[in-house]
Length: 178
Image: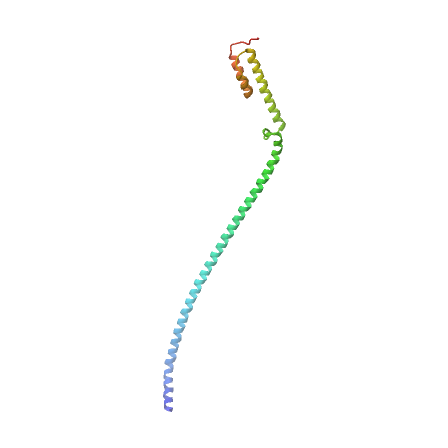
């Protein structure tokens, strides 16, 4: 048995370098496989990181867009409120200006002197009436023409009386009383 042990020991000593080399090769293959797996994992992690960055940037764009929309709505609401306030202020100012004008009548809204407008209107009415009376008396005294000249003078005033006077001058008849 001793002999068998010696043979086995000798075989083990002779086989040890081959076994060590085989183990080293096997470990080298394992290391290469591990290194490839690590590189693949690193590449996958890089892709995941890029996807995460892209997702984050997309979410930030969405948030900025929503923020811009909210700001635009807020600005529009502010402008509407400001416009409503300005409109109320204008209406109040117009009511202040129109209150005295409404008291004096609609014809005097643009006239700065409220009493002067009424006086001018009264003077025009009296002038129209006096001219119409003059035309009426002249038509009766001369026994010519018709009542149409009275209406024309009442409506047009001085212009109608002037046209009547031109027609009268062109008339060859003389007044009956003269």
